[in-house]
Length: 220
Image (cartoon, rainbow, N blue to C red; front, side, top):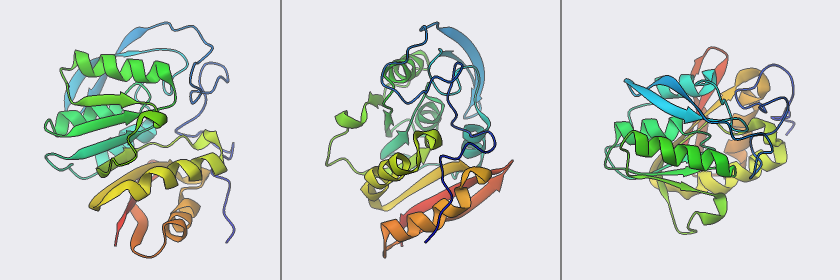
């Protein structure tokens, strides 16, 4: 099966590099850690959040994440939730606001992003958000819900490895929702996921908006 490169440079990805070409998915960004506060709307709440250079979408709530948060179904009241590639934390914060009894795991390779997410969760009094590097995620942890704006620019092979590391960790009734820009390979990613996950799984388009696809993944 032939697939478009999900790391293509065509168009503007919802997950591009930051700060003059520096990549946000390195563990320790080289750019100065210059913190500042911005105002965003998350889960119907006006929030003051801390952002910095070297982190994805360091000056705003990016369009892809905004589409995801507006279109996904209401999360369960409780459970174990994953924000894969958390950046400064908008998805993890939204999960925790909508489901205060849930355990929310915010995962990123970028240590600055993890620190920002942790600080933003504390500022919003969200004490069930836990930040982790991929290596810190317990092997036996399984998820009821995954929301992610995955790092397309990491490259196709690394992206596929990332998704196949975490999507199979969904619990039997769990669901994942991924937002991917259409012209960066969303439509070819769907059949790839269906084939890679194999029988017993479904991967399909859940919604479309503003040039983005939301992909729903779960057990059949």
